[in-house]
Image (cartoon, rainbow, N blue to C red):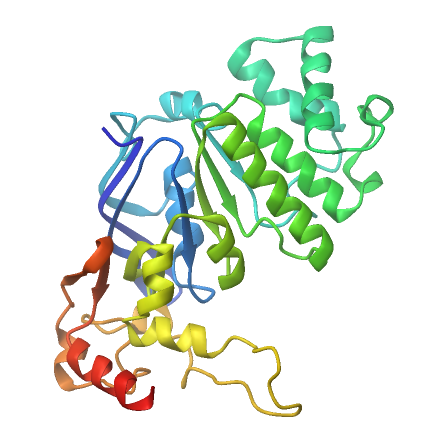
Length: 329
């Protein structure tokens, strides 16, 4: 049985313009120790999908479908039971290290909170465990900084502290939502290397959200490409990178800066802009921005078409997309 099974997940939100479908029937599974990445533009549903796994959606959100974690159904689970899973068996590294920590509590108190809540540690035992966690994530001179506050640490150190909090109880699943946001390139690599090492060391499953395709290529074994609350392409990372079957995936790859590109040249872009959730067509969410759009694209939700090596894509014009790719090769 997979550690995590998400089946036909729907999430509806209330907006100023009325109800909107933020996540539209996505499905995936994750085995113990497996790593998965999620990519897509801002607003495509990546973060809200993982927030649903943590039970951290707005109170007004309407959730349909199924989220099974180690056999337990999370959709509709009462808050008391969810608190026994959140921070204990599922840990999360939040997106923004500058705001993820409480500015009025010491680091020892914040990193030690899941240890107190889930493992019953107090006093010296909790501080000893917090010190070991801070040492493990590379906080220099951690013993003398247990009673320091978040503003006394750099952005990279705060992210390391966030990782320590997420790992405190040895979760089975670690979710990392853009864990290198606002960090410089050198620190980004250090943080990603740290996460990868800890996942391998502890045998955790990992869900990594990133806008950086290079990070996804180096960090996870399989991936989802999301747009408009839907998964438009999925499969082993190597297969998705090699095939790039969906026009949206092709657009993401084409927009990457290339080494050796002519100075002053324009980067490729995906035409148009991401529509608001309430304006998405009932069919393919990419309809209208896609160069291959026909009338049926606006009204027909594409089925998942299997490709070799466990690769899947949702597009009703795969033949035309493949023919155009072959002609331009």
